[in-house]
Length: 563
Image 1: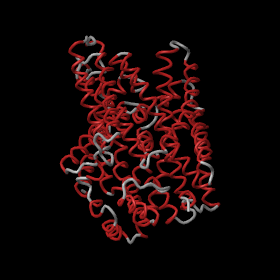
Image 2: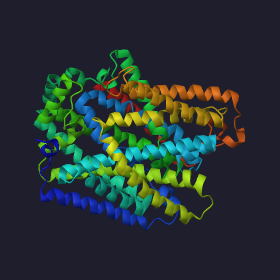
Image 3: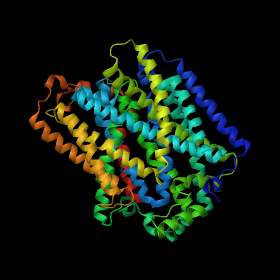
Image 4: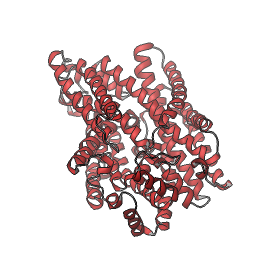
């Protein structure tokens, strides 16, 4: 029996009605948001007017795309507890750092995008490299979300994959072209609740079927990979290192520092959500508020993946075959862990909620990529290098056309993503190419005023090239790392190479005058530009640093308790 047929979900009319109702809501939000779009700032940054709790939930939802849900449940099925590192080591610390340290610069300098910050700090060379690599990365990642969205429609309705991909693209395209970032953000808040409503029952019903928590532990210990899957450290299977010390170093430095800080602090998809708020302190609170739900999301994403690998016969069989022969391939893959579990354990009605949740996740992810792409394309590429000084309405039109172009391009990149057995491997590879060197340039430029514009772009190019070299060496088996180890090494290499090249180039080129660095470099920015004038009058539960401190204590507790 072909895997797609084995996976065909027996959805009832009730399930289809729930999914249809969800789509009506999504398009309705797009139409409502359209009434508020009168300028390009409204379209691209929601007129900088949204409250922090809305942008905080959107911040998490934008990241809770296909990648997160399918990728992390696939990781749960394959590795078990070590997957928690992606959340507790690989996300929360960087999100708190973004809120406490970086956000005042982004918001205070009134830039409209992360590449625009690069242009002001380093000039056009680094800006062009960053804007182009970001635009390419967004289309590749939107393709991943689209591919997985198409897979769901293909499984649900039996449509051919390419038809499913095109239909999925049209739905996302319609609401972003209508309402811009506001439509994306309000939909992301709706999607956050739909996703939780879908995954929580799935986890509870799955746990019940497997005999509760103790039943799951017994079965996991008896499955390929054994008891190691119930301990998050040292995580050798995940990192691909034989040595415990190197594995911990790879996870803490490669994932916890370079990949995670690179992603959360310089990824405009996320930062754009915080820029849409009404004040510095609201912008700072956005990622910090997001950190609270982010801590508990692995419990409803990773654990269902683990349940699927021991409860669903197809997944258990696939895992056993992969353990016996790592090169084993079949129509089944870890990416389908969640779908198989839904098919096996959810009754009709709940299945509709589950499917709406998955569709919501992919649409949130893709919408985030596309809305970040259209901003960078319109402001950073078109307005900067092609047509300057046109009226505002012209750039609004360019933004809408860029949205259509990005969606069409994502349809083609969707089929690249289909070649990877674990989508997370593909994504970590992309992040090591684009985000790790960007973070190095950023952090050096923000705290070292002597760093020159030439060093800015030279470091970025050298860092990206070094990550690609590591990737190629691993592909042609000069050295071989399983799991996501290769991308941890590539990210670490890109970071170090970028810093070294930037320092060397700075010695032989001219820095910008200090007067031009106000608002862009820590030491040159007066405190009043970095702080919110109303900060002292806020109640305790709205103070960014206090909220970040509580979140940090909680996440350290989770690491100790589960580790």
